[in-house]
Image (cartoon, rainbow, N blue to C red; front, side, top):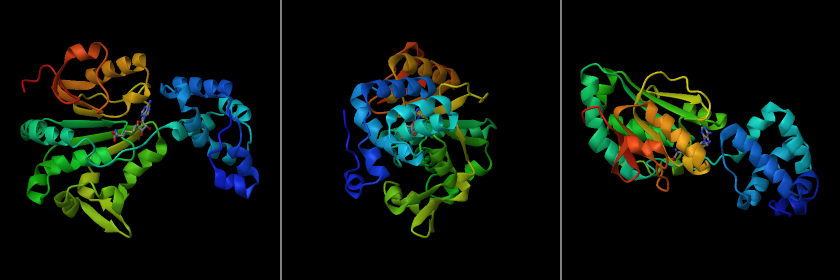
Length: 296
Ligand SMILES: C[S@@+](CC[C@H](N)C(=O)[O-])C[C@H]1O[C@@H](n2cnc3c(N)ncnc32)[C@H](O)[C@@H]1O
């Protein structure tokens, strides 16, 4: 099967044209899929062969290779290239205030409880698991802070921490930079934009006060987790769609274990809890679940 994904390169000729027309045979695709399963539990079905070809063509070019067979051999022996392949094959699509009903629920139902807990000196912990470039975690931060200094002041006197994790180091760096284009910040409500964005050339940077709440870390959700505290809310949205049912059920269990009693789990619009974890959670909204206990 041939995939001509860079016709412009092909017209120009040279090495990149060779890569563009390199064949990704089903055997190599299956080996790549097996590596993705082992490394990240990402489940690549055979209909993704064109996508995999187009995303890896650049890796071949950068490594001076013209055959997928040689690339698979390289990935098998070179850990760094294996990590680069995982990065290339993850989908990082995200945007600010994606699935707005989650943020409405969080502001309306969860925030008052968290503020009550903070008032009596209890810590508040929120995790964006599979955070991509940070739009999700900074949307949460804006909900916590509101759109005025008065509504944000409670954060200064409280122990509030947001963790943002992803398997892909470049997106974790983007969370740390907290710098977004004008088009990217468009979905942020105007009052939040006015309060929490600082212009920086053509871009916008999230205000230091919100950035200070966020810790960004590289973390494979299927590795061991170093966190010891329980979370009041976990956003793991549009991440589980990439896993097979066994991996999903395993991850759900671990996420529910990480929630404090009464904690909330937000998952993506096309996702649902499928494993035993569902029995430990009450559905309290569209793709929103609450762990029993906690007296809320
Ligand atoms: C489509 S984005 C979702 C971003 C955000 N949660 C949202 O809903 O807008 C999925 C993210 O999950 C990450 N991811 C995929 N597999 C992962 C794994 N095994 N461990 C950690 N993160 C993973 C990807 O790198 C990607 O950034």
